[in-house]
Image (tube, rainbow, N blue to C red):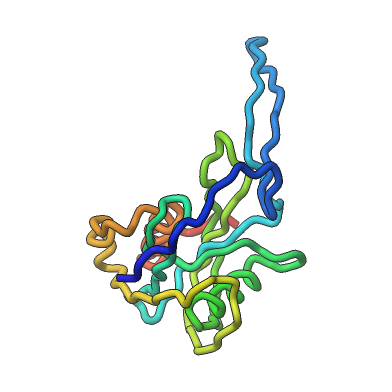
Length: 186
């Protein structure tokens, strides 16, 4: 296993490249007033991709999660770029993170991460009919690609490196879609 990066310094940030905090004054139907705070994203959204190498093998990535200070095993994901469709963003992220593009993409739905204090949404995209193609990404180190059997999804939940909710939810959504038990609303 890789050694985690060394934290050289930490500091409070008032402005971020892609997030900003805002206060929201609310009045509820019973007359109660509150001020809530939320993180406001770029407004473009994000994608989490379920890349299927074959009918039962999903490709996961091991990537350093600064928030937890450890490596996490999950799905390829990233923010959408300006003027990019969900499908274009999904294909770009696949090429950057795992070195594959996809000829077949299906949007399976959207997930919120923490709706009480975050405004961003993440689109779940199933990717099939993969082909090798790599684009330069913004990751500081090459990501390790880890194949996993979707039929053994229940075993993945016991892995200590697996905690990212969007990846877990997207894997279950994809499994149900591929089994014919779930169809996205049009």
